[in-house]
Picture 1 (cartoon, helix red, strand yellow):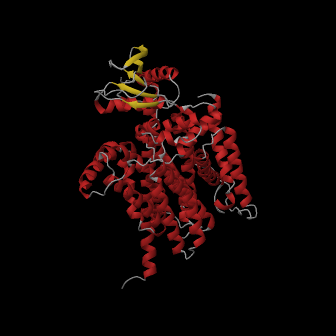
Picture 2: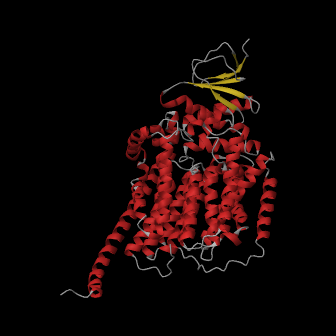
Length: 443
Length: 163
């Protein structure tokens, strides 16, 4: 990697956090810790950056560094101006003191990131989908919808949302050349944000310090372990896992207006990442609104705000896919119950052969139905189970070789859910064996 | 005569709580140890793999960055790119093989040359409709093609339109 590539790699997360910070007056809760605030600013920044990249592409304006900087500055200033009269969120969060759980989690993330830099653990999907798109977007300095719509490019999943490829292309634009190492290393940012979101959730909900620390270490070590073994550097699946983890703090505290925005942006981020993120966005939003109903705090304003933010990602994506004819026919088909036996046998085969890089951690998914018994985890369990059901719905409908599809995708799809299930397992265990929380959050 | 409920609860709860905690913490310690061991296993495997990349010669479905087949294809596509204008429409033909070898070689080649439009060409070859043809790792003869460059394993041909 060259020095400009390295500098661009460091610059992008900083700029994204800065961009996302322009909405901090709306997205940050009083109890959010500084690391979580920073991670969430980054997530918001990525959603805003996606809008900029997409609008410029549709308007056929090149993504020069100055154009992007100007557009981001303009959008950031506009959002900041909107919130200028909103009083600053009073912060009750105390300073975060690092402990051994943080140390192990940081080691797991850094080790994964360092190995990403060698390109040895790069996902094949980086070559087949994300990387090739990013290289093309870098070349013509915008999303190349015409290229995606060419019949022979069906292999690149042209109908997928483009956020990851846009981020990779931006690093290259800032560096002046495309370097795979810079792009793939960016995956480390997602892992770091995942660990921070998991930490934040457990810091608020788990009373036992030992469980909090061990829980964070287990979550981070397990996802990094899988990421290394399964070659997941440069994959978009981290983004779905991050979206769900980032939604957890808001899903576990009393619904409030900052929670609405956190849910909206986590959902929008999922929808901008991969097709699988679109149903997840819907499930997360429905879970949050259900909680508002349960807390008798349902408000039409919250619904409209969340719908507007999520739609701002989903509607343009659908419109562009439709306009350029990008939807692949093999992605959709009739529901075939007759395929159940094939799906069942292929799933067993995948658990036996393809999922071994999880080293047994996928068994924790069996806890998801049990989570339904714990009141505060019930809706999260619902989201996890619905998302899992969606994957099996796809297996029963997609017009491709079902066995091959399951063997090649199931281990990766588990990544979306296992970190969240592990966090919830720690919360549930704490309820069973830990001391009562000093500051309980009602479900 | 039974004990009062509160008393019964207090005397039963303490040992059961201790047992619950012991079992729970043991489970967590076991899981933590397992995740650390398996993480360390994967880390070592990856390091070993990255160090031995230059000696790996796997089927295209298993190709990774830094391995000899990918480096070879990169050299080939660099030369192809230097000869062609952006957005040229180019066919790509390579040896068929098990596990979709040709498909995966084609996708790597397309990744390495995003400036051009690379189309997969299968045997038996129909009349060629692309402007150029890359022949990779195999012999190929066709009445429509004339060489731009030919080297062992990697050649670029101009395609004459069907008269």
